[in-house]
Length: 253
Image (cartoon, helix red, strand yellow):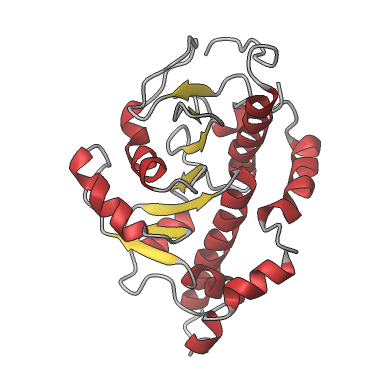
């Protein structure tokens, strides 16, 4: 893998900050154990009218990604600026569909975590078993598995299944979240993953379970807004960056 040259002085301050946050999100996904070697993606829309996006250099482990190694691409998944790193246009199929359809989806995060895939294979999907699950159930869509996501014809169905939700369970495949920025997408994925982990452990206990009253789910979105002071992912992001600075610094290079 080529040595990264800093792009800090070659991009706008706004894009550089986005690069830092997106690189941090990649490393945090690895730190929390949700990565799948070099596979899956987190994409973010670059500020401006061009509809350009940042994505991981294909072949680089999530824990290695830096702000400068992120690759700028268009909606076709093709590089729009010179970069020593390869990209995986096929891997951007899911992301490009969502970015194109959802103007508010500035960041799209997709994982193949073990707990997420396990629950995605369960017929009933996410069950109302935990406080975390109520946050997911309040804004959740499901998309049936159609094979490795290479087919352009799948895009309309994917977009329809996500609708205006924050969470999408890709059956037999994994988890996906959207957010206004990497911080929001990450916190949503943290909650999604926690819901799946709790569910897998609860079902493994082989005891009768206590489901949450469905009526409680209805007021969850407003409760989450109050708890985070309206910041959502922003309330945890500074602490997550401090954690990353202690355990895997260098993402802002």
